[in-house]
Length: 355
Image (cartoon, rainbow, N blue to C red; front, side, top):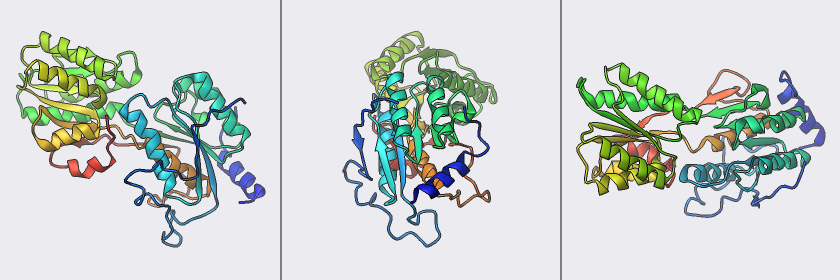
């Protein structure tokens, strides 16, 4: 792709949006390197896409990618999924910065992408507000930013935003409890949240509360953990000691759910049904086995960054989402939060992450 066509394309992408440099530590500067594994054959670059389809090979697209450190299963899957998606296209070069929870380091990574004049940046910020100014700088330089999961505090800092649905997770979990309660308005409902100070936790809890209210239920016992195995076990131990009888339990996160299930086993409790959150493979294996209090989980897609890579490629190549009438890529995409049970687990387990 020529410099002139690249410049024209960037101007077109950035038109209509408000415009508002350092050392980059690259764990890998990959050209479609999926990191190996059993899925390599399935992830081989597309070579036989239908003529005229969005998957048909086009101009080369260089995408800078930055995300927080992979300190739990869901976050690890974010980067792995992005690499695997990029590996499917022989016209995509994905430059992957080392995962970090240091905002200043992540800012420097984006500054380097700007200096390198990448075609697009896919960014899951550690802190959306703190990363907003550098995202605005990238947009002003004509580099479209695809904001993943944690929103910037200025909508002009991204051309596209890809989000999960935290409120929807709570609604889905609450609707499942209502269905299982089957009109029993005396059912005892418990909740183990994530970090209470985070808006995502507040959204999940509000959705759960609102959905339960639809069938006359409410949350009788609630504790908060911290998305870690250790935190989940401690919170669940406290909850089980305070609540001698439970009918339904919603745990917000399957990573911390490993600790929650350990506490349940230690307490020798099995009188209730449990629903998890996020959608780990570990959780789905238990659901499929039928040999656990865990009967369901709600998806919070760990493939959001993979979707970001696909959308970045479409943007730079001047394509749109082929199943929509619109001729431009949408400004915001919010992913659904379905409930996974033994009846439909096979539909989701292939894209699940490992806790």
